[in-house]
Image (cartoon, rainbow, N blue to C red; front, side):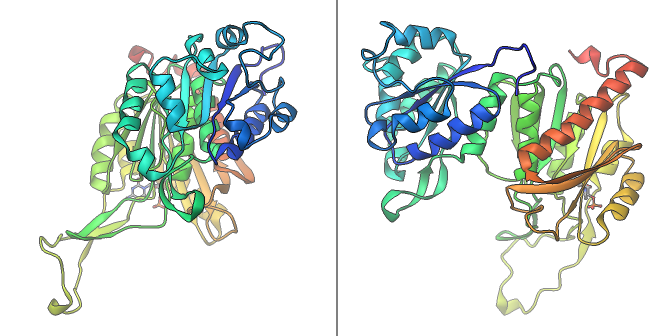
Length: 414
Ligand code: C5P
């Protein structure tokens, strides 16, 4: 929620006519819950899928759907001028074409022409339509004009089809929207590097050794840091939709060695490093140049340890830099986590008991213990976004403490 006395940020939530319009109800609800003022604008076709009353009941003001039926004679300019963000979810192929062409033939497209606020579109459509060159060209045009896009995900579509085109998860859409609004800003001017996902260590040209990490917690940390104003580098092994945002760079890596080389460069400029990645502890010593086959018999793979990236980063830590490690444990997590905190020399250790229900790998929820030198805080089962904010609250507190002792860390960088 916004701090008392702070005016709520205003989002125009555009809903266009696709089957996933029902998910926009959830987007609306979550934005309002986050303290945002939401004005829903539904196209005529959106009304074939969802009711205006649903949005009016959940949003901050009644939903609107026409340029002409409203009390105000010029609803589009009022909406466009007062918006801090225009978010369109779902965005159909037809809407994208009209927006890219600069048309203003309904309240939503007229509002988009009348706004100077940042715009986020979340396309959703069948795979064939999504892959059609005209849709991609319209999106390229919009991206060139500075429009941000949360791409669709792969999964079940209408009428039993499966493929790319499904609207991104409402929680991710809201997270990106909040990031674009700038949020609390308590990390503004800070550089944050986050690692995410399980590394993949090759065995031969077709096989690798990996683990069950989904990268969701690391990605949530990167988006939360972005929302709190940081300049973020996300070093990730997973393909998850991330927003196109001027303060976010995404580097895709596979192996521990690749992750280490990217992070060692980042560590020279980062104020904060969060090692949320599940880095393989061992890798095959030799990578076969040709695919191993059954004809060769059972392979005898010799392993060697991977570099401990986190220990390396702690060893080269700049003055004032805050380093966060993660520990996934199944046995006596708090005691083991505290020992790992000491051994790795980190400032914060986030411990997951991955044997508990709903915790850790691949879930959308998590429960953690956040350890610093002086404190041990339990965060009970909640969303990975909320865990990300709890971790960043600790980071912000440590940065503030260090500033008091040593002056602004990395001030020369900004
Ligand atoms: O020792 P353990 O693997 O449990 O430590 C987990 C923490 O150390 C995580 O923050 C992980 O990203 C990091 N790590 C690393 N390099 C490794 C193994 C773990 O940076 N080779």
